[in-house]
Length: 256
Image 1 (cartoon, rainbow, N blue to C red):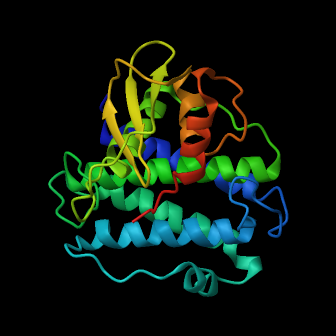
Image 2 (image 1 turned 90 degrees about the vertical axis):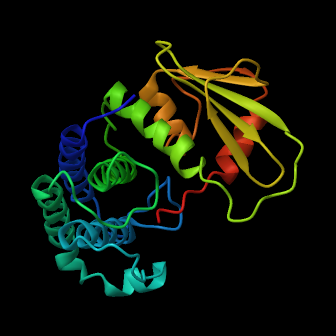
Image 3 (image 1 turned 135 degrees about the horizontal axis):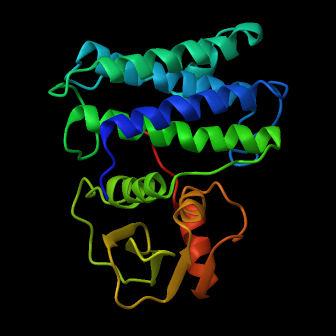
């Protein structure tokens, strides 16, 4: 399923505004339950940096990867507590403008396959922001709200076929498949397979046989697979829950 660039920019715009509102409801020291290493201030520091990092590539048409700050440096570079919320909003707005103003034939660095660099950055930042607005809402103990089913399917596709579909730098040895998880949107619009190997995952579209099938609304699957849902509410699991536990324990996404 392909989501248009404009739709991703709208998603990014809306979710950034929701994140801002949710973060403003609580103290900056409020813990983020889905990212136990962070509080709200650290969440804002991370996403504020990521938005500016992405804007630099898009607005500057930067064609090569530039050095990134590590987590410690990102936190150190963030503004003081009294300024960080507005700093986040300014960075988010700048990213939305940069994407909206970018030419369709933009040439710049990317790190996942996409129809174009503009399509890549709009999609990646839309889902980055959606996932973290959920973090902020959970920290603020407010209702997470709806995620559009089409966008949810798109986000699962990016996660499984983008991040976990990347080929390893070196050809790995043949490894025994410990099990296969089949993922199916409840309306039957999309299906994926996650093969659990000893040290990694292998993903594909569709599945015939699986040890475990996880079925549910696309939005619930999106939150589950991005590890933004601690329980299994909203989804049906047939087969071994242990395979799903392996996925949830090992599926850490590196954002660049």
